[in-house]
Image (cartoon, rainbow, N blue to C red; front, side, top):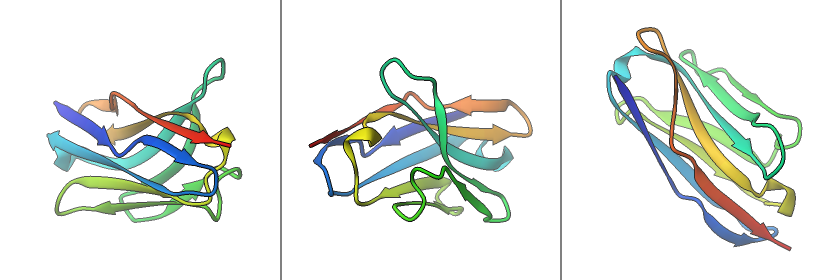
Length: 116
């Protein structure tokens, strides 16, 4: 199996920055792509950013220029660097791995709260 553990959420003022990390263990070699999703209260879970095994990244329009997804292949860890945070970025953030052995895998989620 693949286990994902997220860390780095918290409370920040608008305009501030946070970095999230997602550490994979188990069959981490089977991960082809990784993404970050978020879900705000009363809203559907949405894709924030993704990175494939070739390093190609994709971002939601709402975070382009402010968020950066990256990875450390050696450590099997993925990151989401968030700057210029806005109150509308408040949500639970989830990392998601696409494993060719196990299919989609989700982390437990980490809360990000941006105060105005």
